[in-house]
Image (cartoon, rainbow, N blue to C red):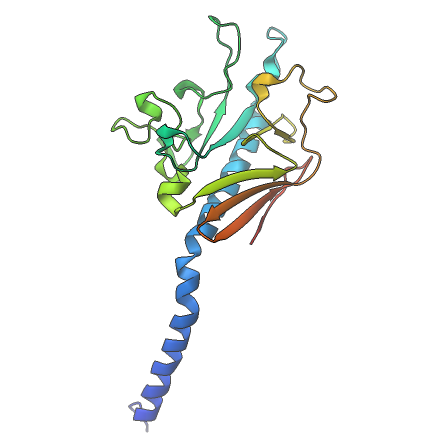
Length: 223
């Protein structure tokens, strides 16, 4: 009965391990790009979910549609530590300025479903709660894609632009800043995405694309 490996068998095992290591290590090193894409895709879906369960229609506020839930990406904001980061929020009416700012405040940002003590921003403006570098930062650090995953740039193209996507109560995706819209659905200003929106994450010489379909907001990751 055989109870031990022969020398030839041990050498063979070592060779196989070496081959597997050579194949797997590059994939492991680049796995952070895939992880970043999966996280962003999940959070886009979360934004869509919030929009569908939180219908913003109000007969008392004529510009109610500007409060739709949205996800906004920033590449060069100093309070995101000069790294690509994103924020999920619903804009609110300012009774003093009688307008919508288009930029998130702490009270407007979604709660992190994985940690209710955190809000869904990777860093946005100069308040301590939203400043990635402040000790009182209340955001979710993983949403700072540059610091967490080494992402160097995020771009939106094809069916979308201006660094943000929002959703209506049917889950349909919109492009652009809701605060500059003049009606909820109107020719030339409605901004419903009419063709695939490509969100591209860059990491050094590599990139990955998250594609958002019009009407349904269906997501797929293309590498």
